[in-house]
Length: 549
Image (tube, rainbow, N blue to C red; front, side, top):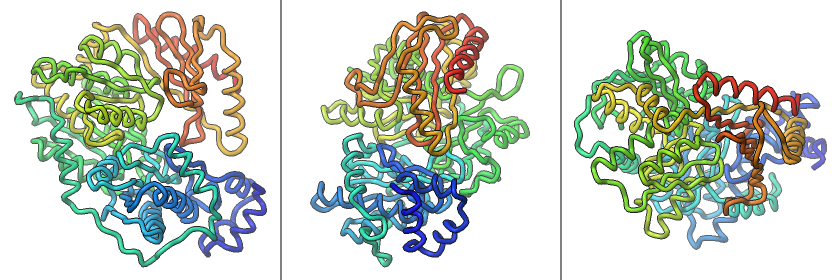
């Protein structure tokens, strides 16, 4: 693509708002906005809001919707689509653009009447027997981002093969000439009964099985100006949790995220206000969901009364052990129980699962692959075998009611687990220590490195090529094996992921992010203590950085 020629074409054919943005661009901004089309894959689209082929705007959303419409009309006799959107800037606009395109292509549209969490789109797609679902969201990215997530009829994010077919349709289109739109399109508003059905499914995930627990725990909850407020508080209230304090500044939807510029519950900065509320209220538990409410971060008090954040791996291990122990105690474990996790998620999960006789399925990074495995189980009549799935990036799911990570479900299950152990006089930190004593300490850590723009993209490719040539010793530990998932290992789809296995049960996974301009490095370090593991982590990261600094 000649970025200058395409820029001039947009100046001629785009609307006044786009032309105004384009005229203000510097040469570098023009190049970054037009050097390629916004990538479409299994995660759909994601990018910075702005003008250009490499940005999120009404034209790139319209083109993606037209490509998806063409695919659906070829694949289904009378296709239909569920559309949801979050609190991000222009999410409602992009949702309406998509609805107009689908309607113009004679595809029935079900549109949520107000912003909604991403798991409700997965749920509604199945509940309404739609052919596909679309969620306008950029998850936990900063406010300048938005995205376009696509689900199949099974409620799972689209597979690699389906994404390739949709992309082939998109690439046939001219962004201005070939996109149909019906601005007077009538859509069917999704009824409130669908949200109620979703919440009932979430409530049904309880594993108390009649046990009484103390639900009068003090919970501070922040939706981080996103979509979680109504479904999370409603679920907790209906299940008996009445002592919930909302972070007022982050309660209502606001795509500018004024008090948490990076609304990601994985990072402490996003939880600063929530932690302040906890200290003022002497709360027992902090919950925070990201803007599209598929991730949950938590903090609990330590024995000194200070609040400690738990990682995605730590919460996942706690939930796994809690669910397995409760199912085992009450005779509710299925005959062939299955736990599903990603290859970058703590290997300690596999040891816990094995202890309870639960089979582990490891999948590529991305909850879509967990959803895909639930779908496979359903096809062979074993959907009930699935008891839990989690990923290190704060995503959890205890049931098969949706096929994506579910922050509403996770928030409720965390509260139930917290109440259960509190009733027995045990804190979550004490329970975590018990797990480490039984199975051994394992540090899991993620380090992300940003590589912006065309130069950054090229740099990441160069780094992955260097790594593929092999590593010897890192941090004083010998690498005994390299797994290159670009070759499609263990019946998994091909993916640009490398895993280096060290001696002493340690590993490093490296992959470029599929949705952000970042190189992600995942560490799994077994050691005698947390202090020793942290020391090893620092040494390994320092040595790896030499490859690109």
